[in-house]
Amino acid sequence: MVNIKELLQRKFEKKYDFLKLLSVVYDIDIKTCTITFLYPLTINEISDDDKHEIGEYLKEQIALNGELKIKFKKSYLDEKLILEDVVKYFQTNKKGLLPYISLDNILIKSNLTDVSIEIKLNQDIFSLIDEFELKSMLKNYLDKLYIANFTIDIKENEESLPDEIESDDILPVPTKARRYNVSIEKKLIGGDIIPKPEYIKDNQKQKLSVILAGFISNKLQKKFVIKKGKRAGEEKSLYTFTLKDIEGQVECVYFCPKTHEKTLENLEELSFILCVGDLKPGINGKLTYYIKKISLASPSVKENNQEENLAVEDIKHNHKQVVFPDLLPRSAQSFLFDHNDKYNDFILKNNIVVFDIETTGLDPEACEITEIGAVKIEHGEVTERFSSFAKPKNPIPVEVQNLTHITNEMVAFAPKIEDVIIDFCEWSKDCIISGYNIIGFDLKFIKKITNKLNIPFTNTVIDAYIVAKQAKINPGNYKLGTVVKYLGLKLEGAHRAFNDAYATAQVLMELNKRKV
Figure (tube, helix red, strand yellow):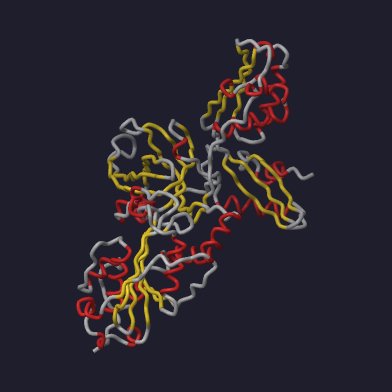
């Protein structure tokens, strides 16, 4: 059998001594061999060049009938994960000791390189075990899973063994660190972040190298001057913001080098990010998350189960209209828009639905629609208005409520979004669909629902944002409010769906005036 570590040492001497072989898995069905290496917390990153060098060399040396994949995984010394593996060891190798150990009698402490484990056994059973053998076997087991210096101490517990052991006394599986899936969209700062994030609510104590994720808000940049050392007098930046998931929030700090200032500046409010950092007291003594790595990400969506699919079919077949569009009388047109003979054929010869949505966040896979608003332009006149709230399954984050002014109370008795979308698709059938920056945002939310319902939504799309950028105007930037103001129009009540849709309709018609 090929010794992979020896191959690397023979070729590269001690260059990759810090790597540990975690697993070699061969999938016979797809003829793929996956080799996974561990590297320690003290190594900041495996460079792409090093990954390529190792991969190419091993492909040359290993005669494999199939594809070879190389993976690199950081050895995170998470005390909860280590506890799970200690219990797993006893469940697999020392079942006879399970009734005599409780989780309260397993103490684990760790830092970047060292892990100490203390296990207390009842005095009656302590005398019956080979302490040295137990420590040695447990250490060998953990050495295969982590890169760390393990110190294991087996101690005698002063408590006597009870006459009878109740089933409740048997060592339970420890409560696992609750984690959830995310999909990384783009690495922003630092390298790969492999393990799944934990919930912020579960991390209320100091801890190193914690992986958390959530939506950011209240982002602020602060400047400070280094007072001591070789770089005294140099100005640096730090960013502070709040990171919030569905159960909790934490204040964050990132000391930002100049190379990443642009990245942080461009990170928008309510972006969903995945981070690695240390939880420790901040300047105010409050537990603060000091961030080291950031990736732009999105929460993974749970697969629809059979019950959800049945619910979707039920909605489709038993749907009753929930949104009733308003007809705008012709007399209202005189103050909505000027006479239509000034518009070109795109406006005069097409029926156009201009829409906007409000949501619980930026990610269409994880967030929900709370409001949809639209107007219909027919032959150069705004003829109808479509507007409805939708009740999300999860509460609206406070930051989003502050931005959109849509509260949980306002949507408490609103219809389901599926019913709203069915009505919207029927109302906008055979119309051109438009809106402001809808290709990059709004349409993704709409199509998520239409795909789920398996109903067609194949309308021609004209994005007013693209129309504005292609027009010969120079507003400074192309945010909707800026373009509206530049064109001498009005936008009242921004970040409410109908108001934004109405303003976008004004922009679209203004940019499609006849050229005199």
